[in-house]
Length: 217
Image 1 (cartoon, one colour):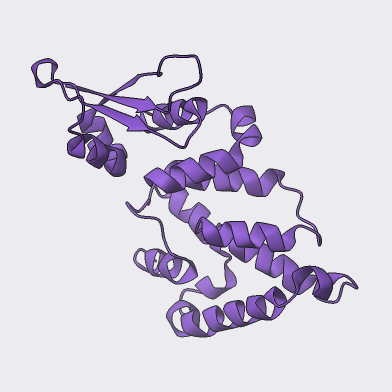
Image 2 (image 1 turned 30 degrees about the horizontal axis):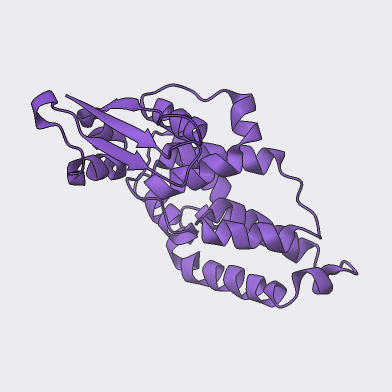
């Protein structure tokens, strides 16, 4: 049967309605499927259709995410223009493949510099973008001697150093035999993508990536 996902109402316009099949959602978007299963408002059992109102997101971004769930590729330029918005909606609804793709696009197109590094790091932490987080931390450490570094990074600089050193020590024994400790989070995740290994729930960081890599090496 068909489930209909409805985004937030736009002013002076009726709600957009997007049909989605329950079995596809269960297989590719479990969190959305759960929302449908829990829906009991305006449910029309005689038609076999449930309505779920989705608020707090742009209808076009939601449409792009739903298309991704159905196997449609989001145009590269669209992903470049709205990479952070796709990261946020994919993080919200646990669409891992879209989140990884949008994060990778953001990494390729962002303008990382001394002035905005702290802001981007905090964003990465808030969305569990561990690849982006590691990338920014390494940038901060490499630019620690910049005259403006301490003023711009503040106490975050020391925190970054502690995070990366603790992470390296914790994973050293696990990673040594496979030389995984020499790989960045980005490198390891790209290997997993190439092998088609995608978790139902996103990894929490480097340790989870090493465990996933170790399972087949």
